[in-house]
Structures are given as structure tokens and as C-alpha cells.
Amino acid sequence: MILSPSFRAGLFKKGSPLISPSLVAVCRGIVGGASVVGFLSIASGLIDLTGSGEDTSKLLIFGTLITLFCAFLSGYIADVKLSKSEGLLGVTCGFVACIFTSSFVYLLIGEMNSFNDSLFESGAAFTTTSLSILDVNTFGNGMLFFRSFSQLLGSFTAILTAVIFLPISDQQHGSTFSELKLDQMFLQKRIATIQTIALIHLVSIAVVTLLLSVGKMSFFDSLLMSLSAVSTGGFTANSDFLTDPSVQWILIVGMIVAGTSFLIIWRLVTGRFTFALRSSELHTYLSLITISTILFYLWTNSGSHSSLRQSLLFVSSSISTTGFHFLPFGNWSVAASFLLLLLIAIGPMSLSGGGGFQILRLRILFSVSIRELVRQLHPRAVVKIRVGKEIIADQNVRQVVVFQFLFLSIVFSTSLLLTLLGVSVYDAFVSSVNALTTAGPIRGVDGSIIDVATFSPGERLALLPAMLSGRLYLLPVFVTLGYLLSESRNLVRPRRRYLRWKSSFKS
Image 1 (cartoon, rainbow, N blue to C red):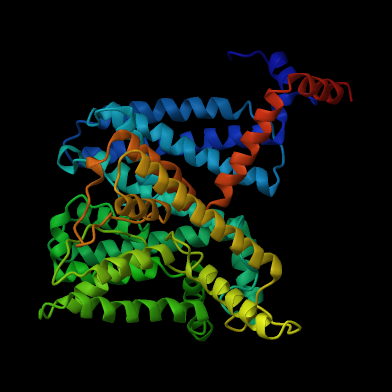
Image 2 (image 1 turned 180 degrees about the vertical axis):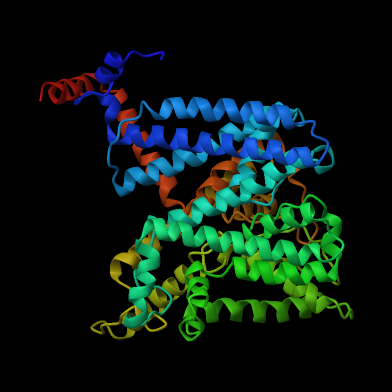
């Protein structure tokens, strides 16, 4: 032991500032995030044996050292119960730790030119943003698995954060009272929720992998593509398969399911088909896909029989914020580009693996707009906010309004920063929307893909805060910023901080 037991006991005695809940949340998040990357590195090292095996030793050594070091540090973190806000602080710190630690993996392999590049690639992976700068031809099976599985971890963390910490309403998706009790079992029992969501992820990956491997794709390529589809990450190790019609149909179904709420999927799994199909949010989601596909087909129609399938492919990739790099087709118009950008901003259903503003919040804002218009005509009218058959509480409405303000603020600030760095106004706006919604790729007016590798290191790093905020649904990041501001105020007032610590130590 580096620290003696007596020193360790004194280090975490009552009144010590090192057991403050906020500091414990930060330490737990950092140690937990680094441990996840350590385990993933070990697994990737073993996977690399299926290929050339050149990176096996590096991945195994790095993963083992990180895991052992984090296991040692975990013994020195006090066992303190955390509040909801402190839990959000820990989630953000853990997510940042994952991105920062995995950046060293890309540097260790030696394929990245600088730490800025590895940090951006790591951030794009864990935030499931389809803005990769990797040259996949130079990577072995181990690193390809590491990059693809990072997306799944990021998506899994985000959906658990939404379920456990950020419920918009206890009666989402038009639940009746009888089925509400069963849905609350899904939302309130944390361990059961984690197991259920993990099982849905694993089953989805297995099904998509098997379907893809039936064709020309190898099992390993099928696995990597299924990880990207289920996690809405959009990373592809071999883009040649994206032109195969059979692969496109499988990805269409996979992306639509990935954008569906886990609560709806859970209802279907438990046999409550009628309740699942009654969801008003599901109706809106499917209607958006249908209408957008028809419009996209009309705006890009070149007389080809495959254009309808390709239209559905682009629409499902955009609204689920998966962002596979499909090449444009047909007579691409400005309206088609705007439609895809609009779908990316709206995003899929709430409690799904995708990013974006999400449909439930959009419907709540629409109902708020209708209520305000009615109040202008009838000031004394009592108009409730409804989504389907559900009445939304004013507290939840305020949360959505705050989310809208933060969402637009990040888009504006990121666009402004990119413009100051030399990016054109249109490219800056589209890049900021794609980063915040964790979507991709960035497309020009003509539908062409703008390679993010052509951005300068500063321009790419300017996208990282938006990517992180969008993947964690904004609130955890802003809670962390609040804690940082509070701690910075304490640092500039050391006397008050010392007196507070001294009084707590004596008590």
C-alpha cells in the first residue's frame, strides 16, 4: 500500500473536504469512466487476435494498467450517498473521462497525428456522432471494434441517464392508469431498467448482425455495422456495403427501431401490442418518416425505381440521428438538404438511443404555442397542455422550455465560434446542428458530404462541447458547469472556504 491505513482513515474522516458529495461524484465518475475504457481495451486486444494481432499487446497492456490503477483508486473514494444533481455531475465526469482516456488509445496505436485528432475521434465515438476522421484501412480488428463499441457505450450511458435522471413525465406516451403501473416498473427500478435496456441492445445487435451476415458481409463486418446502427453511431469500417440493397433494407429497419422509445419496445416485448401501438408519439414518429420519405422522393426523383428505397434510407438515417455516409442520388435539390437538416434537429422518440430535440418535447412546445394563442383570444380560459391523452404538468413544461433555450443557445454559440474560426455561415450552422444532435454527416446544399477532416484542429475541437452536451441531453453538462462555477467562487474566497472547513471539522 502506498498510503498507510492510519493515513487513509484520517484522509476520509468526518469533516474532511475530501468526502464532500460533489468531490466524491467527480472521483467516482472519473474512476468509473477510465475503468470502462480499460475493460474495452482488454476486450479489443483479444478481438485483435482474430486479425493481424499487431495491436494486441498494446491494447492488453494499456487496458490492464488502467483497470488495475482504477481498482486501486476506487478503494480510496468515500461511500457517500449522492443526490440527483451530484449523480448528474458524476455522469458527466465519467463521460469526459471515457473520452479523455480513450484518446490515449488512439495515440498509443500510432495512427493519429496529434492528441487533438485522437481527442476528436474519441469524442465522436462516445457521443455517437458520425464525424469520424479515421483512415479505417490502417486499423486492425481490435481498433475497429474499439471504435464501434465505444458508440454502444455512449448510447447506453445516454439512455440510462435519460431514464434514471431526466424523465420528462411519469406518464409518457399516452399511458392509461392500468398500464402506467407496469411502465413505472420499467422507469423506477434502476437495476431492472439497466438489465432490460442492456438485453434490448444485445438482442437488437444479434438480430441485425445475423441478418447482415447472411449476405456478402463477413460476420465481423456485420457486427461492426450492427453496433453502429443500434447505437445510432453511423461509423462504418467498409462503406462499400452501404450500396447493397439488401443491406440498406436491414439498416432501414434497424435505424427506425433504434429511434423508437425503449418504453415502446418494452411494451411490445411484454406482449402489450395494443398499448404500444396507441402511443401518440409513435404515431408522430412514423408519420414523420412516411411524409418525409414521400417529399424526399419527389424532390430527388430521377426516374429510378430504387429512389423510393433510398429516400426511406436517408430519412430513417436522419431522423434517428444515425448518420451513415450515404452518397447523394438523383436530382438533389435545396429542399431535400433542408428536409434532412430538419429531421436531424427534430430527432427520434424520447427514451431512444438517438439525439436531437426529440418528438415528445416538440409536441409539448406545439401544445404550449396553441395554449398561448387561445389565451390571446380568451384570457380567462383554462387550457391544459396535452400530448395525446396525457396532461403535461407545468413543471415538465418549464423543463422543456428551458431545454429549448439551452438547445438553441448551444447551436448559436457553436455556429458563432466556427464562423469566427473561418467556417462559412451555412457550414457553421449545419455543423453545429449535427454536433448537438449527435448526427452526421455534414452535408452541403447539393447533398455532398463535407469531410470533417478538412476542418482545422481548432474547428473540430469547437464541436466537442456541443457533441458532449447533445449526447447527455444538456442537463448533466450544465449541472457540471454550475458546480465548476460554484467551486471557482470558493477558490477566489479561500478564507471563507477555510472557515467553513474548520467549523465542520470541529463539529
